[in-house]
Amino acid sequence: MQKPECNAAGDAGRGAHGTPPPSPWIVRFAPLVRPGARVLDLACGQGRHARWFAARGASVLAVDRDADALAALAGVAGVEARAVNLEAGGWPLAGATFDAIVVVNYLHRPLFPHLLAALAPDGVLLYETFARGNEAYGRPANPAFLLEAGELLRLAGDRLAVVAFEQGYVAGAERGAVVERLAAVGAARPWPPALAPA
Image 1 (cartoon, rainbow, N blue to C red):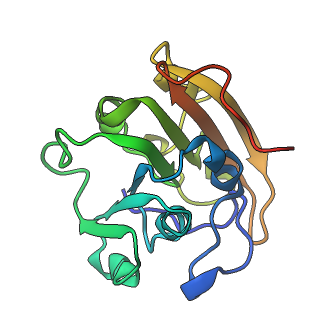
Image 2: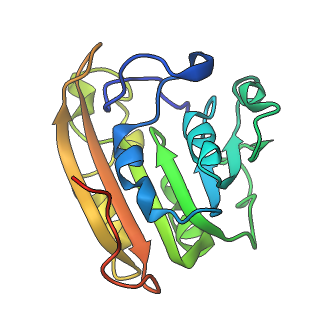
């Protein structure tokens, strides 16, 4: 799936290097990710979240199939950029484990079991993408690329503890969108997790 470039899921303006700023959802729940964590930014595009986590001391593997987009990450301290087609062949990160996995504006359901397997037992999953109903507002409109209502909750199942979940319509500067968002932690994470002040 081609990753949609859309600010409707909560982004406004442009960040450093001409990339959109990090998603407010990711920023809000980033305190769940411990300092020095190994983070996977899946389908990262130009790496707005990879840059953000690396600037906070994380070691980030930024993966995308678009080598041109990944070129924007050349020389960014704390970021390893890797061009990988996530939708062809087997899981390209077999055996790797991450303290946090970040996925924004991307959906390829066959990767779900691999993401859960790659997450450390006390790791953090931060996921935000488009959901059913978005077809009324633009792309993506193909149901294969839109989450069903509550689908991220079902992904977490009994393997992850849900810290926060929301779904619904969001207004954007350019257009509205229907999104679903999840912040969840592995079962080995001490409960309750520390949240950022409101």
